[in-house]
Image (cartoon, rainbow, N blue to C red; front, side):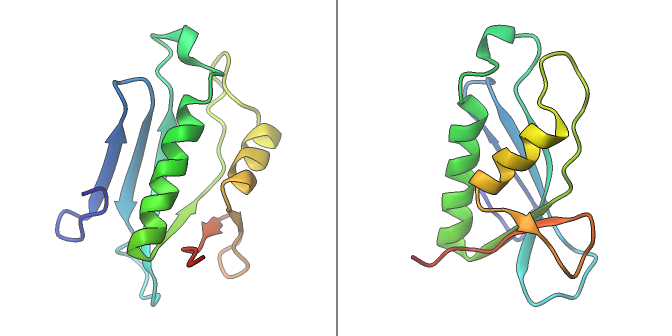
Length: 117
C-alpha cells in the first residue's frame, strides 16, 4: 500500500529510476488526510533516465492512488540546482500539470486535493 496511516510515510520506486518520498502531515489539525511530498528525484547516477518522463509517470501513479484513497498532497516547489534539474518555472508548470495549485491558506505551499471524477 502506498499510503499507510500506521507508518505515517509513503514511498514509491520504479526500478530505482525515479523516487518520490512522502510523509503524513502530523503537525496541523486540518480536516484532510494530507501527505507532504518531501522529494521527487531521478538519480543522477543514471543521467540517461533524466528527461524521459519517468518521474512524471511515477507521480501520475502517486496522484491516482491519492485520489483513490482521498488523500490531499502538499509540497513546496524547491529546485535543487543540480546539473540537468528543472528550474523553478519548469517545476511550477510540471506540478500544475499534475493538478497542484498555490494553497491560499499556507503561503509558499502548493496543494492537490483528491479528485473524485
